[in-house]
Image (tube, rainbow, N blue to C red):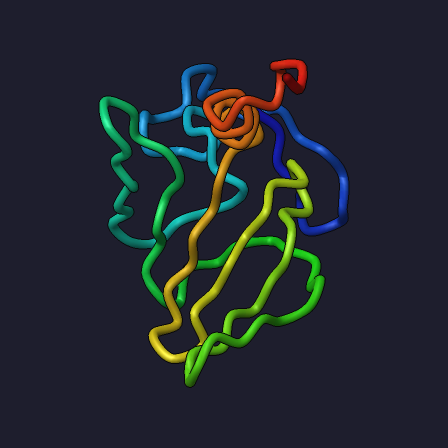
Length: 114
């Protein structure tokens, strides 16, 4: 693991095995400071919900509205994964690309039209 020093130089960490909760051991777009929840669909679990005030490095894409709900749409700077934030609750939802591909396959994307 590398870290930046005060002078901006990269420095090798002596800790070769980061703790299980570190971002290096999770498939998350960034650092999480709270408990996450996942969405269960059938036998699979997809996506993660992060609490408000979670730091996610992201690039704003736009917003969507549904009735009184407003959603901020962005992508992860690190992985490009889609990120949705509900502006009312402040919660974040992320979805990994492998999950999006699996949803597309489940919907029949690989099947020829009849």
